[in-house]
Length: 221
Length: 199
Image 1 (tube, chains in turn purple, blue):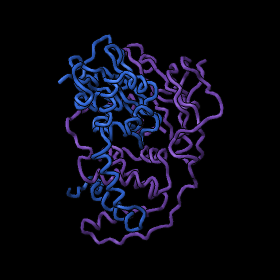
Image 2 (cartoon, rainbow over the protein chains, first blue to last red):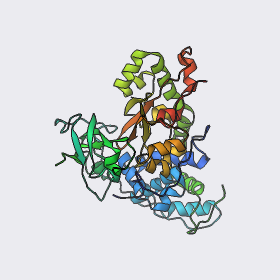
Image 3 (cartoon, rainbow over the protein chains, first blue to last red):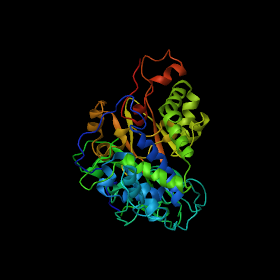
Image 4 (cartoon, rainbow over the protein chains, first blue to last red):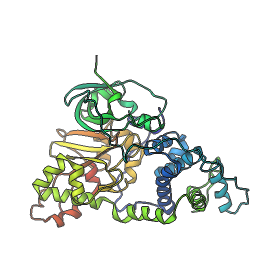
């Protein structure tokens, strides 16, 4: 999907924020709680890391940006818990209002509907029986595709050609795993792209590499 | 924090976090002690000091450096650093002529076992969007001006592979021991937005 999260090459974000020495891991106590809650919400909802990332991508612009990194983790946690009916849609808001002194009736806890899904192994690394389709040094092109759901193929690489730099360990495919449609393990390649292929002939020379799943790639015609 | 009212009367994240924690705890779905353990881990145990120990070892032990560049995950595990977001770590070396810098344009993927949780600039839209398009300008804004001839490679972390930069050992540190080198190695140098400088 083309959501707010796919930021590579997009414009209008202003200057970068230079590093601040001694920055705390969590600037405010709620950020630490939100971080831990979000990690635990993956298990409580029966989701996986890919499905959680997809929940983050589906947040609207304000929910993604306005409360920063831990704000988006909190909002994604709430999303995965409400869409699996672990929590009623208004449960968090109602409780929060009551915490600040209101007296609203809280909704009853619904019956959870967790995804029918179980990982075949911990983590994301998986073996693939078929040989790798592409070799180090081979020229490949990222498919110009626009899947409606989760993908780890950034928009700015679609349709662009590069060279395989490394064959990485094979892994389950986030595009299907995020939707509980199977792990679909694939070979993974680090592909090196020239800056002028990505951004045009006048660009300063540099390279970008990205790890791309085999189904993202094709042989250039 | 005091609750704020935005245009849509959105409740402050601190309040919503507290509400969520209460709701899940009351139902027995989470244990606040487990939350405390997660927080303590990333506040006190897992941070850039781990990566600094890896770098200092590589600077002083050529055989370790060789193993680190060959199989980063295994060499890092030798020092006891494993865990979430560290399934497969690739280490790349910065030299006087080649410079690697790491980003995750799609979210904020980062090698937690060696660097901890990412700093705010790494998660900022400006860094995520711009470093794959104009890395020299971005690095310069962050205080790192690279010579014209230096070849830049931007590593966009789009899969579960995680990248760690092995910075150049600065001149003038030849007499320092591994233990003395550790505090010189910064998080920013291990992401590739800074160089390590001699004391």
